[in-house]
Image: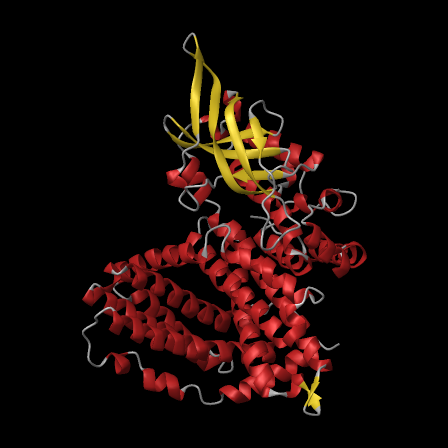
Length: 544
């Protein structure tokens, strides 16, 4: 997959920042939130090629787009989420809605629809979720019944209902997943098709600047060329093919919103005086509400960038990696926003302060494009199979590579990440020996522990050799954050893994030592020193 050159990408990001500074002021965004109003004119300007043309980022040059890669879209997604997650969702919905076309369409269909989206700046909706199906796309009830005349296929009549559709009622075209005779299939439906209607916008907890509505299809007729790929039954494969990509975007949304809330908390702490000094100088504030969140968000960033690089290098799939990126980054963003409210005290609970709105907005990132629980299941199932297939070699080999890295770059925290991976390997093997994954909850918790351990490992691996350019934190600061996160990940994997394994009936009386829990506790030495350094650097980087 191609990637924009850095000058072009920086120009797009700078233009978007300037547009937001001028048009998307906090006062305006709070007004949209209060009125529950979809800013159609803002989306039009964001899509206008003479101004920003954001939708062109994910359209190939051959189809009149800019041909951006996964890394480019992550950077734009993070910035959009830091501005307003509701408006960002409108942009995401067009990208998501066009995915079945880019993945499943014939070359002729792809060029026709994508160039149309590019040149006419169309909003798109993604019609997969149903009231009773949610993330289980295989349970869909929307039907596409073939219509024949003299044994010639004339088209399909589609009947059904879609729920929670972003850009619902606003998009000009929709991709609709329906059950055809040979299996789930994607169809393109235009907004003015007879029998196609939209419900009233949902009154949502957050992202109120986005439009979310149900879709109703009653004998909606489409011609055969609206069946993407012109072959029935490919819908689920086509949907799964882009999960690594789309979930990366949602992960960037969670991270971007979380960092915006955290930056506001840091700046607030620099002006709020308690006991004769700013809150920014108090460990009880920074070491609870600031530093752990920064470490977790940056672990998520490292993993996002790792997956984006692999996608841009041509790897396909990466559904599990996309799930890990989304899971860690959205949970981190949600926690950072929650703590930012706490960091502001009573002010954070009022609508006058943007952290209140950010918290309501970022919550959806742990739900849409697959809930955190679906992510846990996805992660656990794949990595469980990896463990069995490699007879434990998958994570033990990775831990050895981290040992070697620690010899070269001892400040990265690779030694702590290696502890986490080895503890994870012990838990997985204990699950195998005692058949603990028969308990569904254990399988889900394994997914959580995998996500923590892998993100700690990737953070340590990339903090120097692939240093990010996306945030103004130098390498020593991010090394300190990696060490903080690595220790936390090792302790979480070992302590939580021990707890759940015992709770599920594991049989090793020496499991705590097998996990090297005493060594992991000993590895916490120096933690406060690292947190002190990180707090000082965060205060300097995001000064008032």
